Image (cartoon, rainbow, N blue to C red; front, side, top):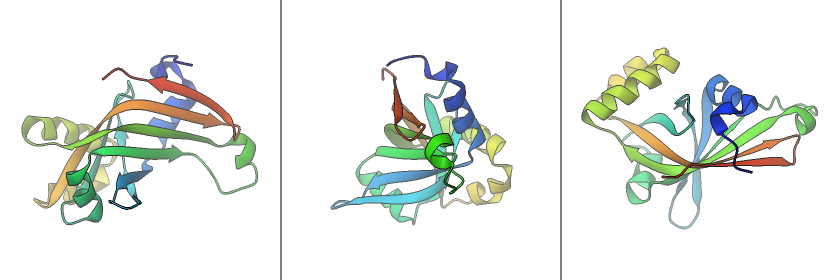
Amino acid sequence: MNDLAENDPILQELCSGQPLAVLATDAGRAPYTSLVAVAVTADLRQLYFATPRASRKWANLAENGQVSLLIDNRSNQVADFSEAAAATILGSAEELSGAEREAGLDLFLGRHPHLREFTASPSCALFRVQVASIYLVTCFQNVREFHFGL
């Protein structure tokens, strides 16, 4: 299915309501996952996150910008099997600089104002993910696909 992602209320709620995502990067021999604060654009085509340049995820991204992120609304209760939703987001991440960094930072800090001091550090990198596909899973097994032409 290739409906418009921005018109899906469950997907919109996940992306605008959940402040954190699990980021998977390529660590060479195996994937590496990290918890990151995220901000997603209203059209769901871009996602932003910040990380220290001294982090493992930054080093992984310097080698390979292909990423996967998981945003979900689970509560770790039995009801999650029928009620939880999860979105797997696939895309390409790039570190931003200059005017692009400032614009992305405005969006990111609009979602996470408590991270202003963290992002102001010269050692903090801001990444933008260009979203290629989103896979939305509801009711534990119902999958809807959204693909964006890049």
